[in-house]
Length: 186
Image (cartoon, rainbow, N blue to C red):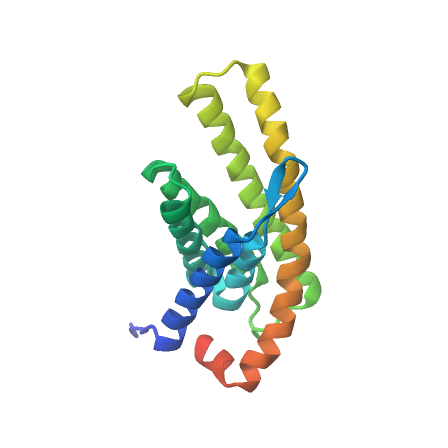
């Protein structure tokens, strides 16, 4: 069995993408009583650029570090954030992968939709479990909270689905021209 090593380009790019997720999460704007940001788009982009495992790691780390340092909700929420954002990047990266390493725009859009909806579903599940079983709220209050969180989550998902494939198809040729793409996919 041949042992595959991880090159410095991949590790560096995981760090860069995690940092981008972190920074982009800071910049939010209000919409419909919630906040919209481009962090989900960067999580999807990480999955497309780095593949499911490394892209998921970058998405999960960047988001978890944000929660850990800027949004003090405790270690349980940090771990949940890591898992849900990892899943988002993993699903997108897995579905965007092709044998030739050149996914079509339609494939990247569909992969982004699947990744974004994976995150929304997991976020809604977390909301339900916390509201109903951890906080003990009645079912009608849980439903109202979930609707209030679902709308901005779907808006964030929509923004991510539009932005991530556009960024991917703009960045990949530049990374290829710079010789970085070949190092990431080696």
